[in-house]
Every structure is written in structure tokens, then in C-alpha cells.
Image 1 (cartoon, one colour):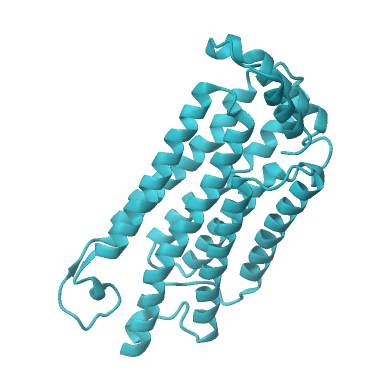
Image 2 (cartoon, one colour; image 1 turned 180 degrees about the horizontal axis):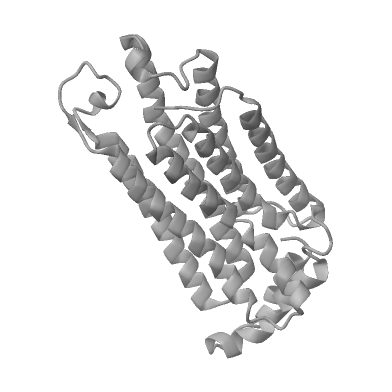
Length: 300
């Protein structure tokens, strides 16, 4: 059941911030004159699905269905709220998936010069797709018949959604944690000053907020007496979109957090350090690759 706080102001603010983050991302890319990449478009798709989820959230609030005791609702109201919940699971999982894929493609664009790192990203991408496909299948076929998921008048049986939720959300949090640690691990090997490492690390570490909200959502949603699980889901999805954009907003961040010199030094270290790190001698194949890296250093 969808539940939330009575005041929708926090949710509206989160949607505005998420929209602003994506807009600034596209503006930053335009200002860098490098064009828009796959990771940028993936973040936009994630925002579209976030807006879809928010529209159902606001609709239930407007019709005074959100936060109500489902046992006290009329049959038509119960069916309506269960249908929305059924659809929201798809919107939630797809929003998180496109946000994570946006980060993966961004990492590949920046860190892809390392073969092993690129393989790790492909594995993360496969696990992400496996996660969302699993949720879609479980949500679709969790009840027999399928319509029993949103029509309590039918007879049949359903899987325990609380157990499934904890399992899938725990895996989701684990994937977020790995995605945060991957760039930090690579940055630790770079020949940069401590300040530059901290600056770069801080930008990528912001993705950890998504994992934190995932944990909080598990705690609050698992407690059936809470009336705030809907807010935590909104927070989680909004942070997923926002955090996917933060590494690309370098030009809007304070200089001590992410400086142009740090990024340039970072990419330069990638080119020089590939032989020692991965045992490969093809890190400077031609001048075209050098030109690509120089362009990337001017705008993540």
C-alpha cells in the first residue's frame, strides 16, 4: 500500500531538485561543447519514470487514499490503490535501473581506459538488468491469478511480498554500495595530491546517499505500523536521479570539491598508468584517443 506524510511539500521539492539536476547536467554538457552522451540520456529517462511515479503519488494524495487504512476503504478504493501500487513497483524499479545505468555508462566513459574496470562495469550492468527483470517478473506473477494482486475479491494465493521486498532491496543496496566503491578504489591508486583525491572521491561518494535511503526504506517499510514508507521511496528514487547527475556538475560545484586540474590530472594518470596497472601497452594507440581524453578532461 502507498503511504506518505500528509504534507507533499518535501516530495515536490525533491522532484524539482531532481529535474534541476538533470537540466543542469544537459546544460553543463552543452557548455563543454562535447555533446550529449548515452549516460546523459539515461538520466533523462530515469527522470521521466520518476515523474511517472510522482504523478501516481500525488494522485493518491489528492484523492485522500494515501496513508489511509486499507481495511477501512471501500472495495473500489481498495482496488484503485492496489492497482497504483502494482504499477508503482514497475516505475520504482525502472527509475533506479536507468539511474544506475547512467552512472555505469558515465564511469565507462571516464574509467573505461582500464580493461579490468570496464569488465567490472559490464558485470554491474548485467547484475542491474538481472535485478530489474527479477522484480518485474516477481511483481507480475506474484499472485495466481495475476489480477489477485490488485483485486481482493478474487480467490487464489500470493507470494509473501515483505520477504521478496527485503531480498530485492538488499541486493539493490549492495549494488549501490559496489558502484560507490569502484571509482574510490581506482582513485586511491592515482598520483594526485590528497586534496585532489578527496575532491574527486567526494563527488563519486555522493552515490552512497542512495544506499543509505535504501536501508532506511527497508527499515521503515518493514515496520507495517509506519506511515512514512512512501516518503522514503520518494526520497530514494529522487536521490538516485540526483546522485547520477552530481559527477557531471563539476562546473557548478565549489572549486575545492572538484577542480578542473584534478580531473585533468586524473585522466592524464589513467593514460600513463594503464601499462603498470593492467599490463597492457595499448593505452596510447593513436592521436584520436588522446584527443578524446583531452575533450573529456574539459567536462565530465
